[in-house]
Length: 175
Image 1 (tube, one colour):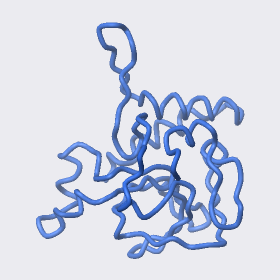
Image 2: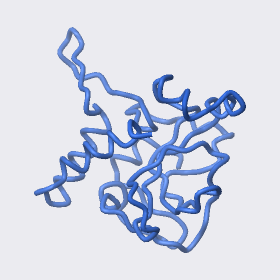
Image 3: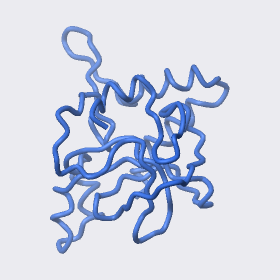
Image 4: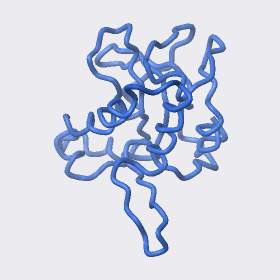
């Protein structure tokens, strides 16, 4: 479970001493290239694609993806709330991280949509983000989320969902 927190810890460590514009640039750069930048032969950085942080454009959006970036959710089992900042059509993380999370009886969950969530600090949770399968979350309306990264991903809240920053809207044009 601690391995899931490493990307968030890296992002947080990059934020200290930066203003909001710098934080948006850092997050966008990390989202596109991840903390483990690899170079190809033409010296271009290759994007990573774990935990709903892929830099590819998610279009067209499959009909079976129920939720959208910017929707506020509540976790059915653990009760925390948060906001969706990304999704994958199925779990996108190294197999060695999936094995302990999905025992044999729940192996089918690996092949269902997964969502990257910024966890609401109002819950009192020490955890900053989560990567969860679709069946574990439900959308709720009228709840604002408090998280230090909100303005990096969203420009506002309309009462039902958060409005994506332009860089995120390019990645999820149909959300």
